[in-house]
Amino acid sequence: MKIALGVTGGIAAYKAAEIARRLQDRGLRVQVVMTASAQEFVRPLTFAALTGEKVITEMFSQRDSNSTLDSSVEHIGVAQSIDALLVAPATAATLARFAHGLAEDFLSTLYLATTAPVVVAPAMNVNMWRHPATQTNLQTLRSRGVTIVEPGEGYLACGMTGEGRLADTDVIVEALLARIAQSQDLAGEHILISAGPTYEPIDPVRFLGNRSSGKMGYALAEAAVRRGAKVTLVSGPTALTPPAVAEFVSVETSAQMREALLARFGHASITIMTAAVSDFSPASLSAQKIKREAALHLDLQPTADILAELGTTRAPGQLLIGFAAETENLTENARRKLERKHLDAIVLNDVSRPGIGFASERNAGHIITAAASIEVPEMSKLEMAARILDEVVKLRAAQQTPKVTA
Image 1 (cartoon, rainbow, N blue to C red):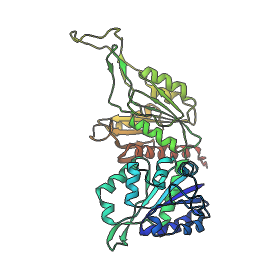
Image 2: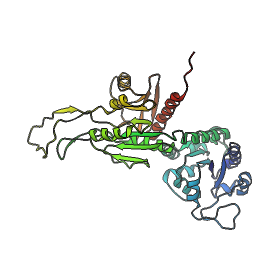
Image 3: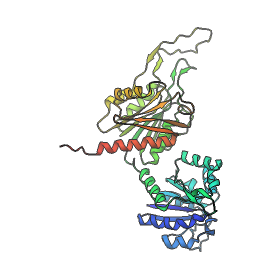
């Protein structure tokens, strides 16, 4: 596997040489990318000698250089060839460029161009680390799936004491290895995900709907793709741009969602139902717009319980995960749903809490299985998607572990 090691301009840049060596000890090929400031602390020749690879030091390289690559678009080639990007040390300026999408040098352009996992290990002055701008940039990067290796606390090169020291080399290397392993832990799985609301028409203008934005389901689809899964996303009406899934199916009504899911369920090894499917639909549809002068009384009928239907028809080995949006008796209601619908796990959300749930960028809740309840604190929906998939991987591993009998 090939790792791009980004080295930026801080006193901790010298530690990147040890990181490169440790990565090689783990059997990884390392290509170093240095910013101009990093070269003020360590020379490119150091990394070229250690790695046996050309070191990239500028966007437009000279053809006769022995330490740089000679293609003006090499950032695209490197971006496509690497299995992960590690930036250690990462300065405050580098974090800001990444967070704001500024392609000002080879490293920041590489970050934008790669779809590989990204791990950054910040190192800086304690006040710079604590500054709200830096913390906001870190949160932005986390929400996009970047792994942050938190700096240590102690005496800093500037003479101050506090957070900002580059994390230990072993900690950084292990974080990268864990991210690489995670990045392919769903390879070979076909994950079917439902997302968004359904709209049940009343007349040509009006419909019954709900507040679901689809953000949680889309985050799960994106996270699953990053971890190597083949993903089919069946979505109700949303304003979101679909991630790069294998198949995207747009539906509107609960009946259409049921049809789309049943047609694909047999091919899925894992199904995650995040969609907020309408529980009721009008018994009849008015062919004309209903005038407001008339008193409106709707005769509602229950829609099909798609999740329960999937739970009773799934094949051995298929995993089925549901969601429960609750406002009262949270755990009791979620556990009843888990058992009644024959699920492997259910994600419980308290949608009465402000700032999380429907239409929010953040979420929190519990992942409940027959044996456990795992609390998930408030975090971005992409981070929560990763936590949910971690539990899915554990469920799959438990299925494959042979049972020992006396």
